[in-house]
Image 1 (tube, one colour):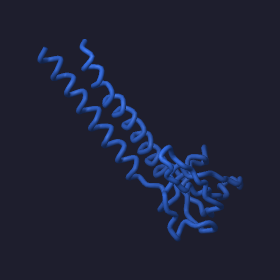
Image 2 (tube, rainbow, N blue to C red):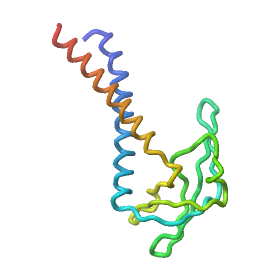
Image 3 (cartoon, helix red, strand yellow):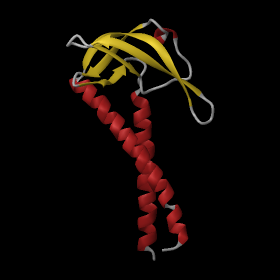
Image 4 (cartoon, rainbow, N blue to C red):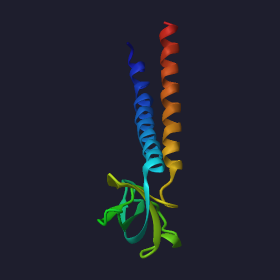
Length: 141
């Protein structure tokens, strides 16, 4: 195998990782849609996180009481650069959570299915494209 072949493994690896993250997110959203329980929640604060490039993302920390009477308080997995008016500190929001694992939840209007869908599509394109190129190269040797 030539060295050039090894470079084709880079988009294959990236595509596989993207596809895995996207499918996991879509499955999680589907499970919440089917078996999740809704509750009224309040935004307590925003956790501010910075990425490697210095961009700032705000992750709302929401609190609610589950149907067993336990207080739940978790940070959203999605962060945004700008906090819109409906998601400021003290705002009341609706969450859908897994009653068996309350840390798995989604904030209506904040969490976006589009991100998981984008990762799935990009991962599929990279993976399928790389596998196709590798197969064509193997068949034309």
